[in-house]
Image (cartoon, rainbow, N blue to C red; front, side, top):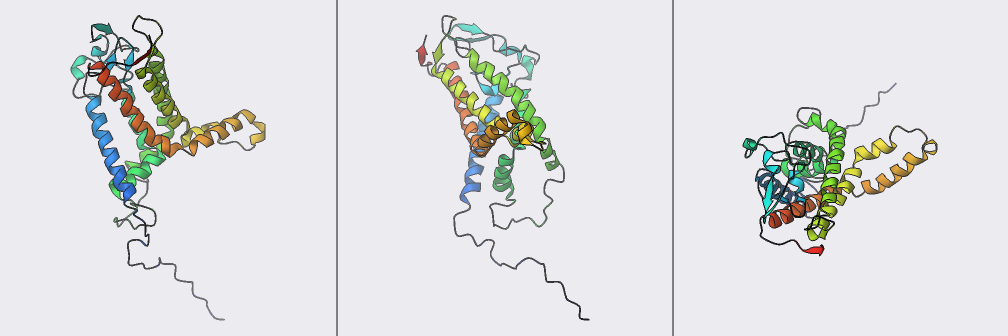
Length: 276
């Protein structure tokens, strides 16, 4: 009786790094530039300690929310004084320069984004070239996936999502407070619209997360027995299809909101008032 030999299961030997004909380098290089520029800007603003609040209209930059430093308790801009410390102050003013002003929210938001599936794809390709693109050989000899520290922490993404929801609620409160007029009553300015638009986009990014989709519709054997959760799952699934877009768009909306508040708070420009 003859013995059949098992077929050779080694990879095909391809001399070229890739057979792709398109310019696959555009995505990782563009992402590298955008991410690096954003991190530099956000880091500078997080430690700036000025031009973060407009007391006349209650505009607070999302980079400083919640504002817990002692200097948040009394801010004066254009002869108007107010408090940005909606949740009290327990960080002394002496921490300025080595602790970010959003010391509570910023670490969780960064961890939420760093562990996001779309951000992983972006910085794995752009900074680590692991791999730089689909169907392109990576330069690393070994691949361990996310089985070792610190990448093992990517599994905590669902918990960072819960923190992101709490922070989004705080940002929503900041946007509501921005409906404030110069006479102390109701008012709407361009800053109000920018802060509201930023919050809407942040909620779209947060709720379109894979973790949210699993929470509302996961571990169900019969959708027919859970019609409410099924409807929620359908709605989140539609958002989830654009999760990667929201991940990038919110980087821009955060910068736009922060920059506008900074320009108004520093007196560089005046807020365009639409009502009162």
